[in-house]
Structures are given as C-alpha cells and as structure tokens.
Length: 334
Image 1 (tube, rainbow, N blue to C red):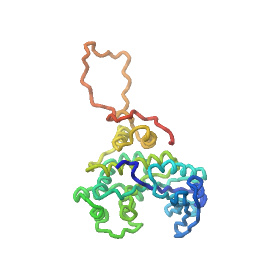
Image 2 (cartoon, helix red, strand yellow):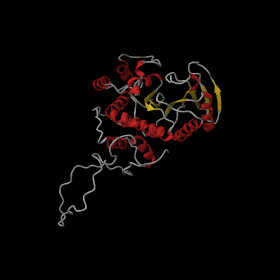
Image 3 (cartoon, rainbow, N blue to C red):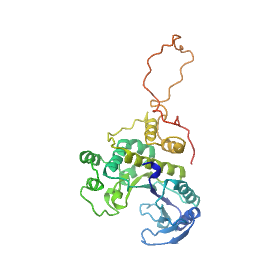
Image 4 (cartoon, rainbow, N blue to C red):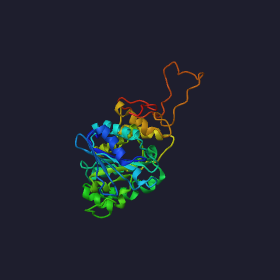
C-alpha cells in the first residue's frame, strides 16, 4: 500500500481565540455552514459542515488548563485523503490569521486509518517505532512533560510480548495491549497515553500518533502527516520488522534520521520540505555520517601518477536513492 492511499485525520489544539471565531476561519476555506452544537457541554462543540458534507469540529480541550475555558479551541478534522493536505494547510493558515495561538501545553494528534492493518502489521508498526524512537523523539523535540504524561514511549514489555506471541490478528494484539481481551474499550482508558496509541485501534479504528508539539505552521503539519503515513505504509508492506532498539548518536543523528526517512520512501522533491522540517533540530550533517570532511591542505601531495590509490575507507554518504542529494537547506513552508 502506498502512503498516499491511507486516510487520516488531525486534531490541532489552539488557545487565545473563541471556538466560534476559529470555526468561521475554517469555513472561510472549506465553505458550508457553521453551527453551535454545544453538546456535550464539556466540549461545547462548534461544527463546520463543508461544501462536500464533511464535518470539521472545534471543541474545548480540558488539558489546556493554562487559559480560560472559552479560549480553548481544538480543531478536529473529518477523515481526510492525501490529496486533501493542501486544503488542510489552508485551514491551518486561516486559523493562524484569525489570531489563534499555540503554547507549551498545545499538541497535535494525527490519526491513521487502522482498517487495512491486522495484528502482524500493527506489531510491525510498534517495532519500527520502538527501534527508531530515540531519533524520532529528538527530531520532533518532544518535551519531557509530554513524554511523561501524554506521549509515553513504546514500552519494552509490549515489544517483548509481541516478539514472544507474534500476533496475527487484532484480537490477539488486543490481549497483548490490555493484558486481557478488552471487548468494549472506553475513551479514557489509561493505555491511550502513549506516543503511538494502539488503544484507538479498538476504540475508534485508528492508530493515534500523539508526539507532536503544537504548531500552526502548515508546512510542519504536512511533514508530520507525511512521516506517519510513511511509517504506516512501511508497516503494512513489510513481512516483518526489527525491534532492535537504536541508540541516539549525536554526531550522526541528522544523517541517521535522513537515511530512515529515505527508507520510508520520503524521497525526491515531493518530500523535500518534509525532510527539511524533520531534520531541522538534529545535530550532525545530513550528508556525512561522521561530519563533513575538512578540506585537504593545498600543499598535500597529489595521487601517484601511475594511477594507484590507497584502499578506500568506509562509505560516508547515505545510500544512493533516486533523485536524492544532500539537503541541509531544502525548502520553505510548503
């Protein structure tokens, strides 16, 4: 399955603007009608039914306790397809223009359709994340409070159980995830607070990715969506996945994560700005594993005239990928 074939949805938490104003900003992009639903009162939702009949919601979020309740506005998209990303970006820009902001409490959750998955491919996904999690969390700049409370890392115990049981069906994975067969998952189950939330597979039919710090930068949100869709596609297409955990090497982190993104299929101009945003905060050099070589002194002897050379050392550049070169300065917001 190609990443472009997987549907998704997003939740973007904002502050400083009333929910009605944010809803009307969304309407300015997608058209349709705005109405105040107001029920349940704890979420006090506003809804925008766009010209295609899809419902965008703006709801209160109880975790944003540092601002008054009427100034908490979480944008909840309808189910979207890959080709809807430009529209979503325009929605984000409109919400930003209306004066909405994000603070350190705000986050973004991305939901990926779990219907094409079974127990084996969901286990693949958990193992892919577990192996690369140190790099992913560093690249995304996930803060310590989010890691402790709302986006906990994949647990060693989960991976041990997956490796031991090798689930093939969602029911088999359900028993591993909960520790028993949970036939009627509830919304506020304690197992939902992981960066990769598989509780949602049985509660809502999606895998929820909860790592992301709040932003109204449309290019960054697009990069996050492309990354999780690529991870989901990798899990679906792979016969198996390694769970050998990778440690973070600050010297090569930027290079290592770029290679990971390329192996996910995020290659070429279509994903140029995604690579730019996802690599931005990592140390190191994206094109050289051990740092960019220093220029040779001008008076260094040239190679022997007989054409002989010393044996070449280890390859220092990433593996060759079609259409790909060093990219430390790629792109803008796109």
